Length: 588
Image 1: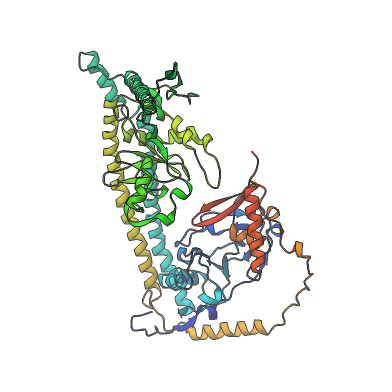
Image 2: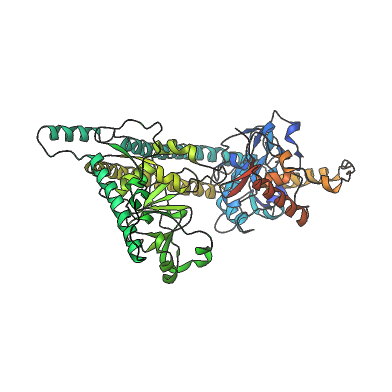
């Protein structure tokens, strides 16, 4: 629409509800197993791209049927703007509104119109909450400036050309980001396996053999550290006897349990001068050098304040990087939880979430702070291992592959503090760790600069895409032809076609057979795929026979049954893109 709000020649002002009406054909996928299925997760946000298909045979809940040329609009979380126009027949999640188009209305024109910025803002303003969902009665009020049919075709052709070029550029940028991420992972793997510093190590060993400074012996340094562990324990025990006015009993020193290297299965060979050591061996001798956060009522979200000592949570732990998400507690509360304190240079490890283990080093300026539950704080012996080197190893794919069998739970993957204590770490001489840190710092800086530049380009491309769509519906995007049939004629034809359909006698509905009370809702395990494939909570509700007409009691009963199945470990729940997915637990 032009800034003067005057309609271009031949255009007409209408609404979405006047030019399209939802298709109501809802069917069971079992009746059409050969048709492809598209769920919300198979549509990329904002881009009108289909990024995958499923087999209808793998879906149990009822679906919306669509035909070539229909426009599918995702009504859940309208800010994601999931809208497509498939050129094939198939089934779609009930979260899609299926809009067939009438003669003279281009389905691609309608798709791009729903993809434009002003429509996204309109739809997103209709509802709020964690899972906003719009209805067609709401979005049908959106005003549409409708061009003549021939001009729609010209607009679509130009849009496809411009957006195709832009999409190609964005695909290249995303591929660059993926390559940079893979390169970062390969650098970490190379570093913790000794390949990155191989040339430096060989040169250093040659210098030592030629009479230069000797190379540090990691094994000797570890032995000295373990002696310090024992000395610290003995001093603590003697202090306790003295405080209680007692003499140490005979054999009291035999009660000492030295930190050991217990997870020795399938340990690979290491470069010359490197040894294996457990995280517990690398930590300071204090009993609290490895600790998780306070549990239960000791620290709850109601304790959070706007200022004061920090709380280090899962949200602060990126893949090797500290994320500065701030939450505070009072000074008085912090004083009660100093056992869980976090200082500059501590390594904090996530015990819960995806891609475990995941860790970061606490930077300057964060403490005073404490670590929260589901996180482990490690205070290392810096004469033995650099916090940065331990951080590299904890975030490496080498370790992730090694400890994958220790991770429990599918919906909420978890690793425990005992597993973390026993993790075996490859320990190079300290001077080689320093060199590895220098090399990785330089290379990561280059990767970060390239990633930042790529992200800026992607943002610019996204802004350009919005500008193209904005201009497409201004009336000045393509040349106008005075010989084109005016949109007013098209609108009148659409109204007549709709009226003719409404005047046709509707087929009589089959009388509903009243079911017994216990049979009104299908069992959850009957609807969930027995393959263990996840199903969105919305699709599961629908498949069980629950919808907008269901009573609050029905919905509550459904969630009680779901919770019971979860507690019985018959089903599990996973969170993806801020949406819950339920799946049957399948014995391996």
